[in-house]
Image 1 (cartoon, one colour):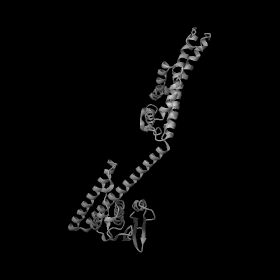
Image 2 (cartoon, one colour):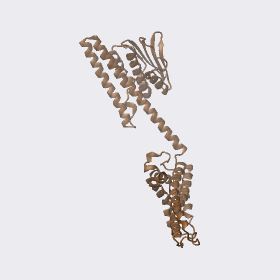
Image 3 (tube, one colour):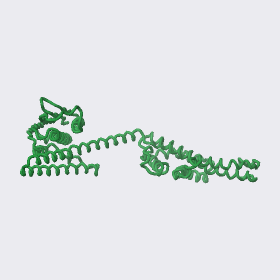
Image 4 (cartoon, one colour):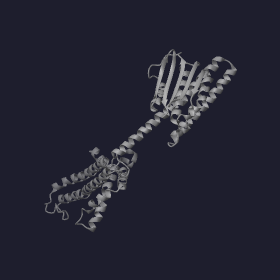
Length: 387
């Protein structure tokens, strides 16, 4: 029994009841003006519902008064936006009419059912209620006392049930339209793509810096040469500073959504990567043909990350080995190639987040990437269209 009475002790039950009572306030005022045309307020709701801002107001009311706890972020099924189409306007009109009808039912359950309970109690004690036309000619009897709790329970059940019903209808009639759902889906997709891009940025920049630092530290300890150790520490310091700059860029994107991506490094700064790899002991043979300045910003930035990840993989898996880097801008295509001798286990197809990131970056720009063994070398070959 306590479980059935529990909804009567929730604040949401009474905020929903208040939400249903609000239209009845206007109806009550109108009845004092013209009781014969009691239906006039319902007729006036039709042009009112066609006003775009009305849907916004109704959505705000529904979120605050119908959703448990009155928190807007609880229920995205109720839209808080003006009407954008005629379908939204018509749904708003239907909602206003339904809200009026349910409000009348709520008023009946809150006024007349308790009144019947009082009249049933009077009949049980021998008095005839004169103000109730339905019970005016009923003879008093003690058995009417059994109907008192039934009328009260019916009133409570009606309040709870009508509150649940109006919430369900609000989600249907005030819910987001197809265009709004599509816009929300697109926004969610953009957020997921942005998160994936940030994850790749962190993997490439921080992973590269840590790999260089580990290789440099290991080489300095094995060499036992103070001069080489000084150079290694200098390279570790420079790489760490570059990684901090990259980390600051990524954190800037997280702090400020409108931050431009033009601050990210481009292929024009590729010398920094090559010098970092050389400082780790790798013998880098670099060849650049074509004008890197003519490469569009998005392609140049992604090309920089691809080159960074390729050099990181060389240092991580092959160590200090000769590396051949070719960057070519020609015929509307940016070509990137990194080759090094195989000295470690050959990764299987698709293994490693670095290789997967290279392929993803190339695919996002409409290009193609090939990674794998070739004539005794490990090769990363990427072609990116400049358009």
